[in-house]
Length: 292
Length: 292
Image (cartoon, rainbow over all chains, first blue to last red; front, side):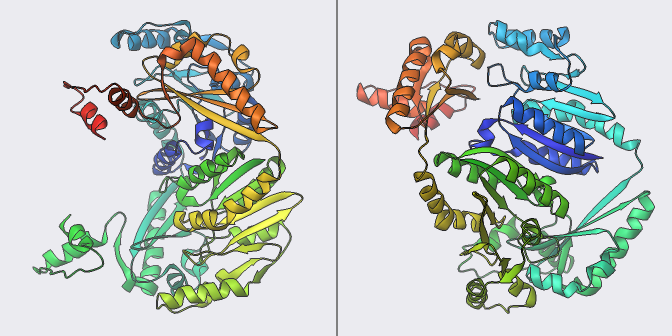
């Protein structure tokens, strides 16, 4: 399954807000073996939203939109979704009572504009919002899923965790593609030398994928294999890992989310050894990390 | 001038990295009155990059790409740009000597892969990289500007600040469009009530723009006016601000980047007053912010 994320909001384009929603959703989808093909940010503009939904509709199975669901004139996402699907917005009574409850709890008066937040596209299943007033929408059409959520991170995360992820897990379990990933962590060798030391990547990978992800402590190699069964995927992954270790094993200190200091710490305590650190330019960084 | 940002890298799609580059560039361009129309994230995939450059080329005047300039096989941005423009990559001697210098300073050996980082599209003006090895590229074609930079934030920011922004300022100064913005900060009124209290927005704005940007302390209203002269833009902005203050002035506590506590502090010291705070659920937050 392929996904396309659309984040809607001028505040993202002008750099006032960093798009943490896209990375949150991207990470969650990746965990479910859903491939995020593209992620885009557009403004609160009808033509921009329409053409972006069309692009996404043409290229992905799952389209997740965030933002533009607020109560004011510049929030036009739902109206535009209704236009795209040639449907209308209707008042949802369950959502309306959620909104009334939300206001009652906070001792605030409900106005006409707040009530209008209970409007959802007629063809959508509303997604309840436990942390705000605007509901989400789940629309299925031509075997594709379109989800719209608020842009406020807390509200979006609530919907993902309380509803959307479990629905997507159900859907993915019916599919038979297995994607496995493994991270091998290296240090002490620059990215370009690591790449050269591996030699012919096609021979190692046989069509599977390897990414080099450098950071200040070293280079992470991420292997990704795709298969029809769990067993075949595990075998492929293990074979590729062996081939890589054969070439550059001496630079690999750990795997997945291990840190250099935790590996050093584990090796020391396994051997019953202690460590003394004399630091100058690092200002105690090594001691600090080892202590953690 | 319209801009389209393209961020290239699988690590952004899978949520491993938050796309702070797009917000940094978005903010800088907005400061120069360049309108960011769209920002997208795609993977290190030739077809995805080609079709994204085409989309951007069709819809914006300035296309800024970041990422995919590293030394390994998964970094294919430059090769793909060369393919899009039907040109070739050539070795740039100035860039090559920069790279040699970079390695010499760090006492590292230069390998073949590192040398290849001096390859730039034949039609591009290379942009020197003071914080890394991969150069940027500045390409002009059919009155459009295409810029490619590394995805490493420090390298990208160096290129923006040392070269790109001053070139863009020169270009914008030749154009005669003036865009002015003003932020009015409100508190004590929810977004929807503020919107209702303003009444007919068309009457207030006469074609200019107003955005509502809520956060935990209140709602920021951002007015944006566009005009041919500085004077006309200032007059429009002032007129719209007056109309807004007439309707909801009592909720406006400040402007631009002021904070509620700094305004309270200023008013207190102007009047020679002091403040005492008794806090329970806020856990000293009010005192802490006032002290700052």
